Length: 180
Image (tube, rainbow, N blue to C red; front, side, top):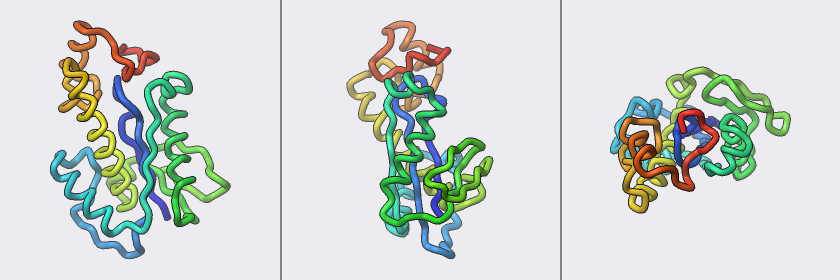
């Protein structure tokens, strides 16, 4: 089976990132959990462990322009399908965090609400998507210093919204989002 998750759906800026992870059967990894329940440093440590033990890992990024063009749900699904298409190991079953997915190559799949708390492969995908996206936003924050992306990663915090009010939008902002 392959686990799928995403990071960045609720952000005002930056891409949405999906990750697909295939772990060995009977993997024992008790410290692995949903990325939202870990600190940045814990996620970095977990990512290294996931990269060591996973049989296959892929990530996909959809930028803000495309999100604006096709909407965030379709961008998320596209990123997930991109991950699946790049896997070296072809899965026979897909488990997806959340409640929305579109069939991929007629493979059986299941949407699991809070799946990142229930299945290791989804939790691993959650960690990888989040760390990949956070690293991207931290790099952007060095060029775009007025939005606090190094700490809010593009999410709609007060500091980010204040930055938008004072300095306007960047090319990385999602112009189709109502909060913008």
